[in-house]
Image (cartoon, rainbow, N blue to C red; front, side, top):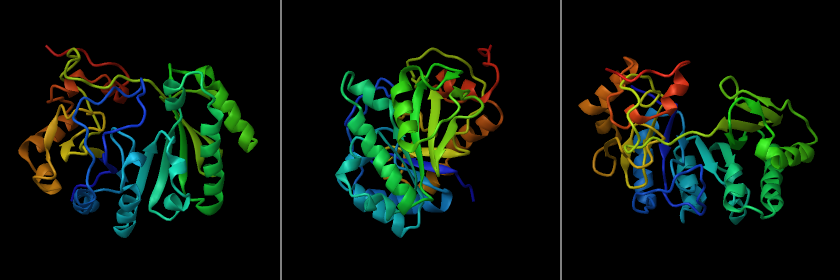
Length: 297
């Protein structure tokens, strides 16, 4: 049986913020119902090590977020949660601690992007206080403070200096500020709390120019994604379902995996061939190879 490292289940494509990092979602707004989520979770559970409640949208804005976490706990499904963190105080900390969440990613780069000039300290200290409590109440929980806005091999400071200094001061630590995200993206803060860095990247689009028909991707090997309306995609960066494999509300997850087109796309990646129009226009694929691939003749 095929097994993924994670399946991305987008429970909502609606976000309370609009970051330059995440292009605006062009699809119709959609919130996955609780019964639909239960069906999807039951079907993907035998195929994945964990689920990520994200692809686009802000998962904490889902009206049944607590019930979704409870269902994950009932099915013993480890959860990775990616959030901008602005809605954390809506919930009691026990909602996160008494769940199957194994990792929370706070996208810190989102705040200044949406609220330039606004005091960011109350936002950050809510997350830091939560983290300090987590270190005591659930020390096995991984927490990443994401700063995915670096220009390349650089120091951590740049536009993130205020956040980094405040976090280091809060925990009374100091870390090496040299970062090479091609080698190592994480720097430990304390316990299982980390800085997590990355550079900005372009989201693939069918409107982008053709780059190459050759390349490798981890899609359909390590992960697969499901949009809030049930559309299944090979890649977590396929935000508009430009390469739709099927719909899990109409077919089972297993049936879609076994479709000829799905199998061919996966086999293409293993052979270094990009068989979809979207993949042929993706610049992120270059991260899996030391040198960019030339345009095919």
